[in-house]
Length: 558
Image (cartoon, rainbow, N blue to C red; front, side):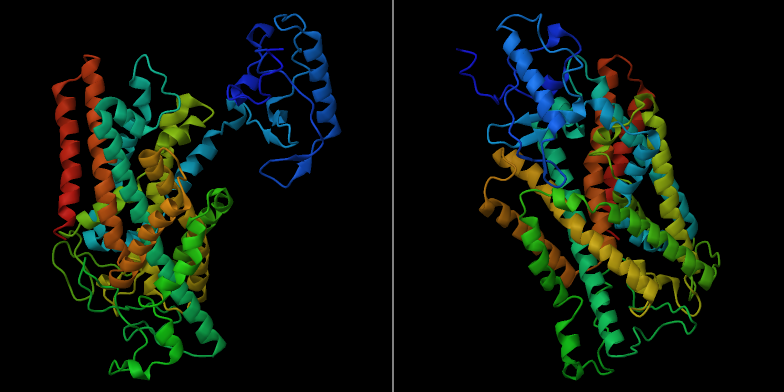
């Protein structure tokens, strides 16, 4: 009777209990007791379906064995061939619904090629749009060298993060991420500081997304309006005259300053009264950032982000299309390069410039994956190949950044335009009437609309989980958080829509802790506890910390 009075779905039952059936001795009679299943809806990721006849028969067999065995008799426990496979196991409730139990670990492991491209796809973000601008700020030769150097440096720090949980003795770290490692070594300080810097990277990415979505939505609407009304508008006074038009939308560029605030469609005297109603209500900085609130604020309030996760493949399509676009433009425009090592000329920039920290800040975010690399690598089938696969992934990411950055910089037509005209978003250097660029902007707009709620979900889960112990404490809590995030995006998109500066600052801030300081300290503490710390290692990793501090400090002087 005591057995029968227990809940059918107790809190002690987990998916692992259903999967541990290597022998009859490992079978828990209390958690393995089956019960009758009605043929009703199954709750699953796919469309609703009914319990199959085979599943019902299988359940009847389990029910039969449960009647045979007593409360302590294990001799008549169900044999292995009767118990379903991991991908066929469901937890059934008396209400007639069933929740599918995830398969065992071996069913979700990925081969190396999948792991490599998962890392590549995760790192490929908005930074790729700023890569030509970053190379221009550093100078062509120095820029290429910095991309390679920062890539190798970030790879080494990522390697330290990847192996950090395995160096902790006598503790089960199988489900740990790097913030857990920081908490282990540095206590509450490590926990909250890693959370804060992680928030900087996520919120910074969301602000950049809002600026870019405003940009892409504005240009998409402008293209459609001009096409429908058969309007041929010149985007800039400075543009090429060939079939492949390239423009310099903001010729009075002040590197590192707010160069992206401008009204493109004014009359010569700048009188707003001459602007037609469409241009008055369809402004890149004054109206479009506010229109996005109507669409995105409700999406941020969704309790679950699983719907938007289905569209992550759009990111891969967008990056592949950008590579094709860059290749086509480079072939059609040709290369325009002259090497002036230190002196700036009218059309070209020197090969070495003192503005190079702007590129290092962008690259710190471009190569940043340290806060989730441990989880990504857990799904790798051959764990012994983790370091190799991580290195190959970083190589592919670096080559992609170099490919886009170098080709756009080299193909930018100088003369007649100046290399300093390359924008933080290189798509701004092409007119709104360019069809290939229109397709790219449309792809990126839809991709960012689906990714933005995912980023908001990550911010909410981390922040609300730490503050309230609940990922969704109430609708009011979530709404206030989302209003703050959206408000930050609208303000920046209205008054300072320079994605290059936003990326470099957020990259330098989050990189200081999660890329340079914490990995270096964790590595030195681990070696010291093992009695293996040498002075060369201590000096080199201390220099790594100083490099992160210098990277952040330099952003304020650019």
